[in-house]
Amino acid sequence: MITKEDIEQLFEKMRKAGWNMEQELAWGYFFKHESIEPLKKIADELERQGYEVIDINQSYPDEMYWLQLEKIEQHSINTLDKRNQTFYQLAKQKNIHAYDGMDVSPIDIDF
Image (cartoon, rainbow, N blue to C red; front, side, top):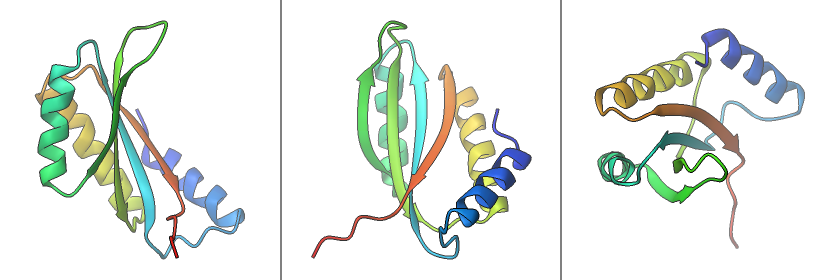
């Protein structure tokens, strides 16, 4: 489970690397489950809430299915911690094997 302290360390590393944490970034969120159908249902639900479904694929050798979502948004340590806690709870409520955390990247700008 990702703790608030983990997020504090992440933000500190990102700031030291020159990231502007006061702007919107592309935040990715990941869920995993033994079968694809529950992930499709949660993907539909989160898509209606403004998340973009990036992919649902199967990993090897564990045969688990992975749902990757993305949302362009700005986070503070507190808002990201709240988002993670919400997704842990959602996975539990929907009997999804796991909310497996997040990643972040700069927003790609097309000209």
